[in-house]
Amino acid sequence: MQLRYSFRVYPNGPQRSALARAFGCARVVFNDALRVREDARATGLPFVTSGELSRKLTASKETPERAWLCEVSSVVLQQSLRDLEAAYRNFFDGLKGKRPKLGPPRFKSKRDSRQAIRFTANARWRITPGGDLSLPKIGDVRVKWSRVLPSVPSTVTVIKDSAGRYFASFVVETEPGILPEVEPAVGLDLGLGHFAVLSDGTKIDSPRFLRRAEKRLKRAQQALARKEQGSNNRTKARVKVAKAHAKVADARREFHHQLSTRLMRDNQAIAVEDLAVKGLARTRLAKSVHDAGWSAFVSMLEYKAVKYGRTLIRIGRFEPTSQVCSNCGVKDGPKPLDVRVWQCRACGVRLDRDVNAAVNIAKAAGLAVTACRARVRPGPVPAQRGEAGTHRDGQKTVVGIPGP
Ligand SMILES: [Zn+2]
Image (cartoon, rainbow, N blue to C red; front, side, top):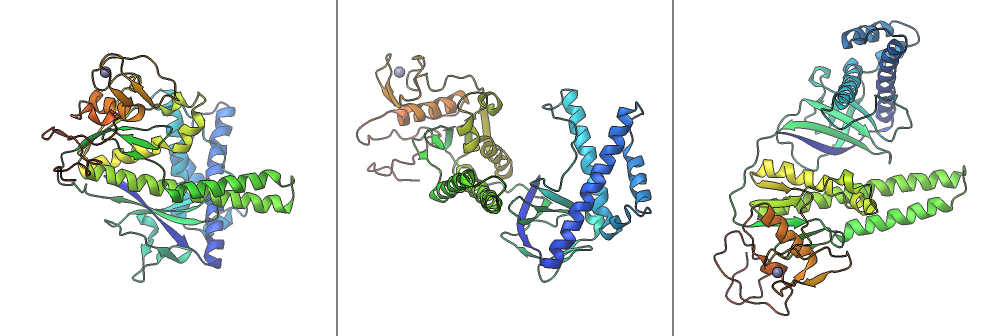
């Protein structure tokens, strides 16, 4: 399977200038090619092929207006044309209904929040014996290697984000690292009160480092709102907001990585609800849905399941998981969001709303979990042994039952 590995890079002054030039050239090539196609479409001429665009690029380097394109690696410019091809392909596939609808390719601006260039093997980029990233016509850039690359990558994308940071992103081919089989299986309810609730009763909140980053972002946004339009202070405050934003995104990704790895390591199978975030986004829940970044988290679970040889099951999105009693299966009717604990009218069991939903998700996915974790009770009661797939976390206080 292919995985993307990103590392922070620290270009020096001249390298930053060279990168700015490369970003600019890649953008101009992209925009020139897009204009050629748009002009052809506007005048009713046939679609301009990619081969033709490539020839036009080579010819334009001979003209005085575009001679400066020779200052950057030609591979970067060719890759920019490839990006345009991909943008058109996605657009056409959207029209044909092969994927969600997208707008037509748009012109790039130097004010875009993300600037990127790509080097393929043809560009002869390499990692030096000293651990620098050697890029043609840019130089040897210092890299902070936060982990080991599992294999030799063939392409590298250099990115500058809105906070002014630089990253090198490598695509590498990896062998799945199948983990030894374990017994537990869990259902996962991605809730609003907690980030996630497991069918074994564990409730997971976002960690303090993420909450702190979010608080700082909020303060920066409030400060920006108070600054006068067009003032210098406003520009400074905007940079602060962009940096705080990047920190929140990083902290969230870090949290998702830690949690998804832990869940996949500890469980053989995980069931989640198919959230169809797009549908939810239209309701007033929209903000919390996007903030929590569930879909990013679920896609992490998905690729880690493949990587570690585990199972991820998505259940249909219209299962009323919070309305059905996980003990007797009777549907008890809708529950307002503020009802955290309810008593089943059929069997009389008191249930924790979130854990009950997580157990129902696991059951709907066909996982062998028991309903007892959803019950609300004053003290620990002895657990029955020998129930396949029961996660015993949270039962360490029970005498005679060893913890995992
Ligand atoms: Zn019941």
